[in-house]
Length: 604
Image (cartoon, rainbow, N blue to C red):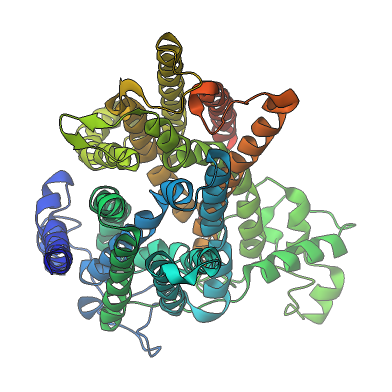
């Protein structure tokens, strides 16, 4: 009964504290007075952008759930975002309540080897960040973001319940592993509809045509990341301790409870949300551009870009988009917007498979330009994947006792979370104002600079892990523990620097990436671009799994123990960390070159 009381007390305390935290405490860390009392749109009227008129209705085409135009004062803004941020916090608590300690569950409860456990976890995590592509297509083309989030959240919750069942009912016997996998991959599928849509849906609550609301949107992504890490903080401390000390069934059950809270909380804010209508398949529009340009391969692109086809209304031919200005890159695609003699004479400009607007062509170009930058996120994500795999396995072979308290190796992830939650306000309040004086950028660093800094910091993370593992192996050799599967007397707290480096890298790279792909995406492709950013995270997990497989294959030939054996004292996990460090450095250099060449999107 005490445990049950503790669960419900903690749930109540977490929700209350989260709301109070968002309403009051964090406002001092960001220079946005509107956050002092959420939902009070009049707060900025006397201070910011005086004299600018404020229409009663939104100007970005947003509607309520019934498709009607919405009043600004009754919908959107922070009063709607509090439900979205709370949902994201609880969903991430549930997700990391599983993923953070999953490798321990596989090795200790299911008795899998280290390499197999790490591979299984990274493949599942990779799938979790691959499925957002499915969610993005469904949201942008058919259901819209709200219904996609709601529907996939139900699937997610069912998966959480299946996980709890597999860990709680030993009588399942041989079926236990099958139920576990069923639950895990339902969660992965459910993640797809949530992660691709929740951050764009939150940003949709601010009207792009209203300068006041654009200011508020500027802080949304920082708040969004805060919500994520509040959930992670709870899962990596409270839930990991419950799993290791009170039972896996109870630990998974609490995670399922919070996913249920996330679903109910999200639906509760429906009357406050602003909705954007789905505008059709982006892949269809891209295919139309490609087909139209191929059909007109023999036509010359005029030097004067104003002669290319574009509608003359205020908005783009693509519903929900602002017009995009013509760029001089990938001019072969511009042929799709060239008017042929037949089209001029007939006046028939309605077939999108033969004629596309400049905005539609530029939409395709933008996606092509973003792909190389997306690819550089893959190596960074493979480094991030080590937090829940090899870092945990490294910690298992170290002294986990501090005074009389035993620290679960997976709980060291808490220091990654602490780094994010403590350094974000320092970044916003100290670093940005200083850097702004030198760069002239309103944000201090632009998004590409911010991402690049994080990539270089990730190199330091792997170097710290490699040096520590080298010292650990040397100590095992000195104490004659090489052939003993025993932890060496080296405190697990020495892992803290690598977690702090990773948390610092995330502040720069992941938040910068989130902002960059939202801002650079054409309006109707924001869910897809957010999903592609997550897809790079997915490929990072797959790359980590691939590297583990390749390294194991080549280092275990001729009966050798390999780099990552079951007994890490016999292996060379440090070599694997050095390898990732070298790849990270090369990746950061490639990103720097691409960032210098990148041309930003321009809306007309």
